[in-house]
Image (cartoon, rainbow, N blue to C red; front, side, top):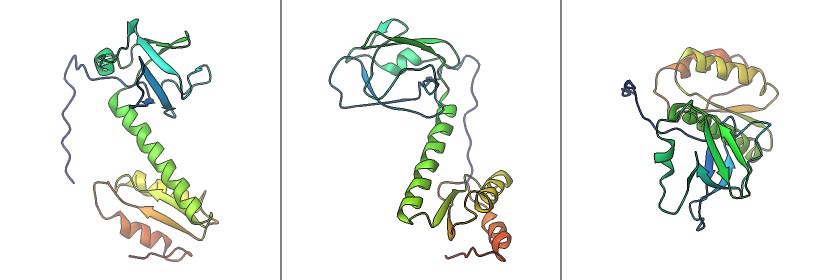
Length: 184
């Protein structure tokens, strides 16, 4: 479970993210938006960007079939960037770092898993993902199980893709007197 991330160097030119998903099969000029990531730079009331819009330029540089959008966003995190669209509209946004987008993607994934469990169980089960085996994750799980899922028949506790540890014992002890049951 050890992780050793490379520390950011001074002047690091990491590629910024717009928080947009693009249609990789789109054959026209520019890049066609398929989704606006919740919490991302374009997810705000004043933004008019919607799925189906086509990004045609970044900071005045046209996107052709040969343009690498990553090159245009290199080193642009937390800086104003002008994004132009096929319909003539333009919006200025502040792109986010890869780490910030990864956190938003994690939240998107958890929300999707919550929806799947809710749908498949007919609303009988809740869903909690333990991001890691630490106190904040325990508090989130505990809060969700006693809060928003309190009236459910049970709760799926997902431990995939975390760093490991022994939090499962704390959760079992916390709920052993309740109507929650552990199945392994």
